[in-house]
Amino acid sequence: MKKYMSFMLVMLLLVLAACSNKTGGDQGKTGDAKHPSGTITVWGWDVAAATMKEAVKDFQKKYPDVKVKVEDFSSGDLYEKLTVGLAARGSGLPDVVLMEDERIPGYVHQFPEGFLNLNKLGYGNHKDLFNPAKVASVQDKDGNFVAAPWDIGPAAVFYRVDYFKKANVDPNSIKTWDDYIAAGKKIKEATGKMLLPIDIAGYDGVFQMMMQEQGLSYFDKDGKITLQSKEAIRSMKVIKQLHDEDLILNNKGWDGIVTATVNGSVATVPYGVWYAGSIMDQAPELKGKWDVFYLPSFEAGGPRYANVGGSSLLIPSTSKNQSAAYAFVDFFTTDEETQLFGFEKYGLFPSLKETYSAPQFTQNSEYFNTSPIFKKIADIVDQVPQIPANENNANASKLLSNAQAAILLENKSVESALKEAQKQLENEIKK
Image (tube, rainbow, N blue to C red; front, side, top):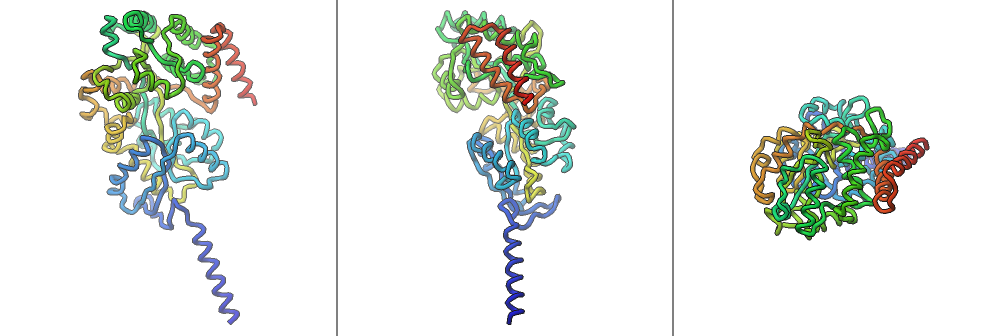
């Protein structure tokens, strides 16, 4: 009897151990690379999460044995949970996670073993499907994909057609930042509207776009800080001129930009193309009153291209169902219909270049002045410069925003404010 009880106790412990090894991302069956199965959990937010939830049925037509659970968080909550999970060596993490491109270098630096090398699973074969700038943003220093490209944000200047007409300003005549400022003065005189919104103390996005046009970020290709470069000084002096001419509406964060757009306080909004979806969603009554032109350059004939935002999909290395997770990532980033679904319904501008010849891109947009704005943006995707980025970007952005506020609100000189920001950044990096 004792032997029987001992045998049963051992069997019970083995069963319990087996059960405890199963996770929500596995469910016991994982299949293989060619025939994945089981359940995976995917983390995302907002329209990307909505896209994945709605389009997953097409994925399951190809992979019927894989069940997908998409969890929708705010981006702030997602990053907090991700950081805690990575610090806890994978505890509670999903099988796939959405991440903004600008955050990828910081996470990979802080958690070098935290995510799968997608090249080892075959994703390197897709390199030519995406533009070089996007590819560079999702590769590590050795050229391996650490993330799969999802969406991008080629930048343009959204403008109010009616304000430009009232001021007799031809948007096609705006080639340089000097042209842009001159147009802003005419528009303000004719309409009383400010030229553009900037959260002076909290958003350095216009500065970033200007630097990208010149092939730089806060760092150069060798990792050297560029905040005292001639390009940085030139960029900030243009922003100061915009402020000195009283053309900037000092708004607060994302909500401030949207409010200024909807209530007609500004004549233009320089932003990523994905902002088209926000305008259409938030201001349907302004149909026909918005259009776009390319960013101004610093000199006639100069580069006019930059990128704002964009996100990608990563697989935490602790995923218990890597085959199914990779199948999901591969499908959602390379399937044309899925990418077009996210674009049509939610305004996610695809990274996948083959989508740009679809009618959704080439046709005129009734909302945007019956103009083919998406074709216009798709035409310049490959001209967006590859911008150096690293794990210190977030700190650099914060310090640059502080410098911008000191220049515009405290009348500090451009050179001294940028010099101080560079010194602070150097000290933080040394720590």
